[in-house]
Length: 238
Image 1 (cartoon, one colour):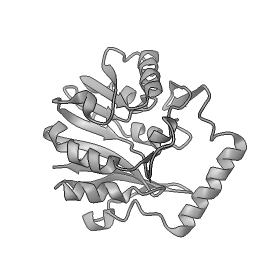
Image 2 (cartoon, helix red, strand yellow):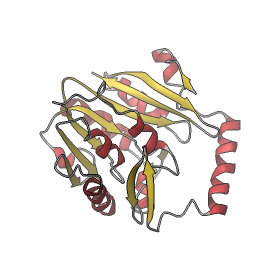
Image 3 (tube, one colour):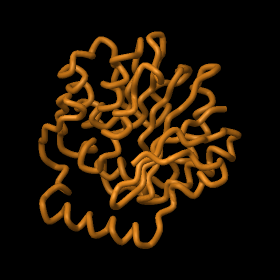
């Protein structure tokens, strides 16, 4: 179910989960463990909007937690013009980079996990967009120092804390909200924007607080409620 956009003040509450929602989320996480969907250290082939994606060990799966597939499904010609240059931050399997490449002139995909960089490159090749997608390894904006983009996509870690390993970096970070918000303005062209996906699972409200501290105006582009969480894509503009 698509939900209407709340006010700017109310939108800060979007990323806070109620107690029943958190309990349902924990129950579903247990269910995933029982049926094996928690296993990421394996090779899997997923299909997103009919497109094949290889997911290699330690790489964030775009379908099991559904966030990557959800953000990718929103990308179309109304958001990405033919002359657009797009940055897909924390690309993971490369799902958003691949779908953005169907419309954009150039897509740069960045991830801190070396396995994700290799995986995204494979999926760009698998989907025939390797000539458009440039995959780079590094932490946040470091691999695109001095570059600016028309659109920046980010499906960030929702949990606060130190990641245990490369796989956990897709879920957990102690300071990524602050650093992403602080570096965002320098990498947006005039008229550019960022699309940031947040969930009621975790501490996503920190991102909205940091955007406001940096003088950005986050607004809800689209939201969808699932059984165990509510996903909201925010459009962030200077």
